[in-house]
Image (cartoon, rainbow, N blue to C red; front, side):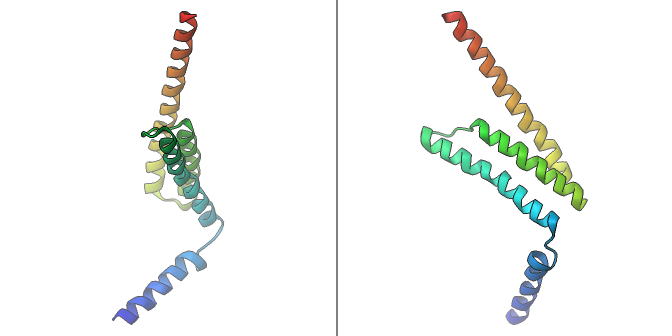
Length: 114
């Protein structure tokens, strides 16, 4: 039974990783790496600050990786990916809008002080 399972798993992974690997699979893998890189950026920023922070770069990587994953979802005609990324991208953009508004507000306050 374990030998059969081992053989079947090997065939499955060969099919997924080798036989079905095409341009869109490579694009999807790159998209996931970009999307995942946002956590590395967040972790490094938090370690430097010695507290949990979310840098602006996190949101840009979220948008870039999210858009690439959305394109991948359309290419693969995968409704789960399309719905998940379409709504998430809105949230990432909204966070950048909030950050920009906060920075403008702080800049105006700083000008008023001087």
